[in-house]
Length: 112
Length: 114
Image (cartoon, rainbow over all chains, first blue to last red; front, side, top):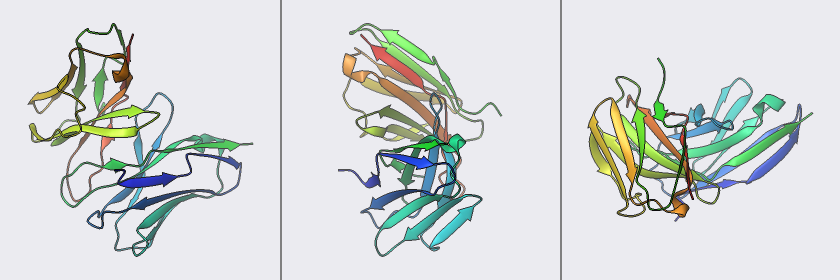
């Protein structure tokens, strides 16, 4: 059973456009929702994270939108750049020192 | 800080051989996670340790897989005997719980079993 469902599997966006990746979860006990970015040959690295007490968090060109009632959250990349081309994973975890459960990833390609 | 260090970066082995993957977590971190990444299944949690104690190994696919953390600065993941379907990228990650579970990943070990 997949606890965090991510879509789309792949995404092609023009340079300067907006990239949007969506995730949905079932377990209402999750209380931490990060997004990780992975470049080829590297391990995933934390990009931005949110807790369910806020509906939006913005860091530079990256924004997380969170809808607690719908149990969905999304990553928006504004003014997408070729350097943003990577695989993005959403994740979730329970309270306390517990491991992250990851979505299956979205391969983003930003073309000039 | 050098980050999470994994070795080897690449491993090619024959089916039936024993494989040992190694991980050095970030100094001071109290949790360590082993994940496996494949195209089909994404990032799967295999096992995690808190303060060197295994907490949940329900993600370990079979008895052929075992993991140890003898001290705070070292962990191993062993596969014996290895099979072609074990081919994947194996990641180690560590974290220091301070209200958020930010996991820092190593660069991974790409395992190929032929």
